[in-house]
Length: 278
Image 1 (tube, rainbow, N blue to C red):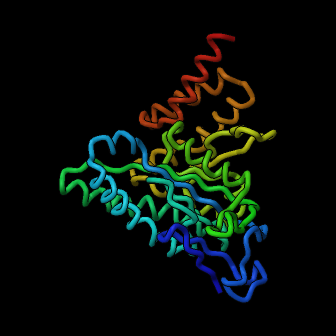
Image 2 (tube, one colour):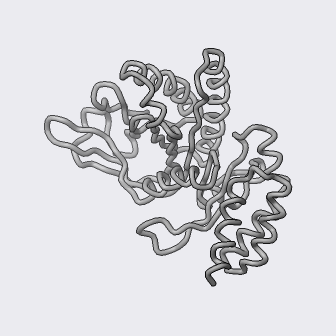
Image 3 (cartoon, rainbow, N blue to C red):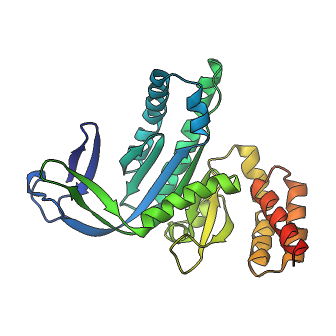
C-alpha cells in the first residue's frame, strides 16, 4: 500500500506504509524517515530560459503543463513517482529496480520525439531534454513544521543524479546513467550503451564512471554511436590514463565515422589542449 502526502495542494510524495511501519497516513509524523535504495531520475529542458523569454507568462504555463502532461504518465507506467517539479525539471524516484528507471528515461525521450512532431505541425521549435539517473541509498521522510509538512528525500545520491543530468549538456548526450545503475540492470547488453567518462563530482573523493544510453536517440544517431563504441571507449580509457597521443588518434578515427559525435569532439579538443601545454 502506498501513501500520498499532498504537497502544496498540487504535487504529491508517496511513501510505503510498511517502510515507515505505519498503518495509515494519519500516523506519519514530522521528522520520521527511512533509508531505502532507489533510482533517482532528473530531467531538464535544454535552453528553457531562452525559450521562455519569447513567451508570455500564460504561454509559459501552458507549455510547461503540456510538456509535463506527456512525461508524468511515462514515469507512472514504469512504477516510479515524481517527487517534485522544479520549474521545467522533473525529479522522479523508482524503488522497484534500475531497469524501470532506465526504461522510463528511454520512453520519455521517445515520447518527446512524438511531442515534437506535433509541435512542428504548428510551427513550434522542438524541445530537447537531458536525463540523468543514479541508484543508491537515500533517506526518505517528512520535513517541515506543525502547520506544513511534506515528504522529501535527502542524500548525496540525489545530488549525483542531478549532476549527471547537467553533464548531458556537456557531452551532447540525451541520457546518462552512473556505473552503479548500469551494474544493477538485469540485462545490460539489451541496451545501447557506451562508457562516456570518469567524473569526480563535487564533494566526492572517488571518480564515478558514467555511461551514455543511446536507445532514446534517433536510429541513425544511435547506429553511428554504436558503430564506433568500442573505439570510443578505448580512447576514453587512454585519455584517463593520460596516454593523450593514442587517445587523440582514436577520437579522430571516431569522428571520421561519426562527425557529429559531440563527446568525441570534446575529448579531441581536450587532448589537443593538454598535449599543447604539456
